[in-house]
Length: 320
Length: 95
Image (tube, each protein chain N blue to C red):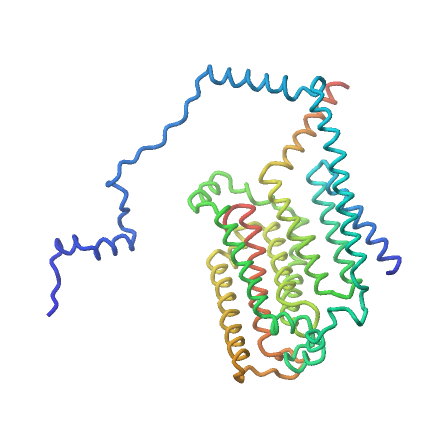
């Protein structure tokens, strides 16, 4: 038999405290702990004078270049040693390079079974005309997944360091709405009006044709990110926020990473255990072909474009 | 290696050295930008156009823009402009 506890008894239980803390309705420190603002450190006038005297003394006695012969000698030795170090380093590296085998030699260690397999059977196994893309997104998809994660973590770190509170951002906008935006430049806006659609379409073309022609997710994503930056620098952040704000950024970025994870893990599990996977390879040369390469290219492209734009927006105004 | 590639390599070395010897931060970023541009042409010559696209977009575009944004934020560009204005004023006084 279960019955509800009366409200006063329930308020003493741990569950009530836990859920109150979880919903954020009460800060456990407010009212419980005495809080005082930090006092400003006071520096007395005499200590300032003493420090000034000390710094003058240090400058006169230690950094007096004309009279201090040891310092003079040190500066000369420093320059000579730096040049010597550079020369020795360059010589050492060139000496090592002279031992490397010549490019294109058939007996080189890089001409082994792995590259032979990639070149001879890559088209049949991956279905991609672009061997590089087929290699990095199927045989080495796990490496590329790590690189995509690196991009995600890099943006997280930049956000931690540079993100400004929303309240402060709004205050700044009210005080000076043109602080972070460029002035309405007619030439720049006219150029961007013509160029931006072409740049976006070129980026999308490179991403979608990643398995057929040179390019792929990273190159196309970088181009789309650069186009977004160009648009923002011409028209300002408010117009960009109409189609790309923080909400859409979060959705795009996390969806891309999760999609890559899901597709990739399906591919690894079936590949590692010798199970037949149900992703059709299609006819090589068609746009809808080569199995997982096209969706993974789209994911990587989205991730890279979001990263580039987020870096720019965070560097310039501290928020997306 | 053709003559064209040799010339590009020479430009590359000149750019790399002059970046470190340039006193003005803005100038060194511009030189670094041209370094990336030359590098992307070299990638095309070495028959890897996908790397060339990435180098042009990331090296010459995005990285330089981030450098510019940082310089503006730490007032490195503005200070130089103010200094030039001050020196102009002084020059006017001397004349």
